[in-house]
Image (tube, one colour):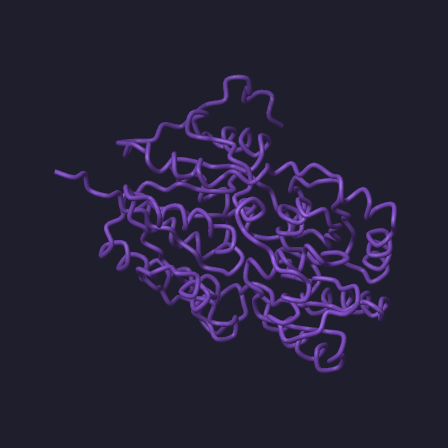
Length: 395
């Protein structure tokens, strides 16, 4: 009698996280011992964010369940209510699918809803990219909360491994597998500049920037005010074209989307705006761009492997490990303008082309599959005490 396949649910709620998970999904799909159950939610199902579930289907994946959870709201109350709706939807989906394990990446409220549901239903969670720090967003607390609900952990650096262990997770359950999105650099074929221009139906005939800016959910300045500082800085470089991608579904994101659309209308020959590039077009654009600007984690985690400078704005990614090709600056127009000037200098561009990315080499997917296949369903999960830290030493 043939052995039953292991049901592996994988959650995705945003375009960015789906791009990181792509090769894990492909490898699960191809493995005869595993049955992929792709659970799609969040902005993937929203017209405002490009209905990116269609891109998932175009990539050849079967969507096992969709969970509508986003309210047409742009506030913390809306995010909290959306999380509640997500728990209800994920309960129905997981009860029907009966997964043996679920894979969750990252730190967003959509992922928190999926993790809470899985934990309560006693479905083991494999959490990817735990132990990281982003002090400028409430994602930081969400990430650590998901860590405590999870059984196995695939982290992106050794520093992050130590931090997950510090949170009470046993060392044998925490593995440094590198950043999963880097597998694209070893497995995917990127577009030429002409292919990218054709795909976008926008002529990239000058040096260009890629710009992605998300609201700082713990910031003191409104997202619109902060984003205007960035637009004012971009105006100091009129000879560069700009590819603008939409923000995530965070508090204040809709205001930024309106500003992006207005900016594109005002500069139609210079500015291209899109809800989502998709993972191949995004990395292809990075390959050919002059610099990546904004506050997306991709600028810190993936971009250094392509040898390009990153200008990281503000506090959203504060605390995250970064390569020396990442220039950190404040949210003011003057600080951003100066950071871009440094990124464009010949000396810094040469430096960026030679850096070593602390997030690994692009061999994570196979290691995640090993975690899935060797997982033994635990009866309990004990808290791991770090012996060399005494309570009396903590101030």
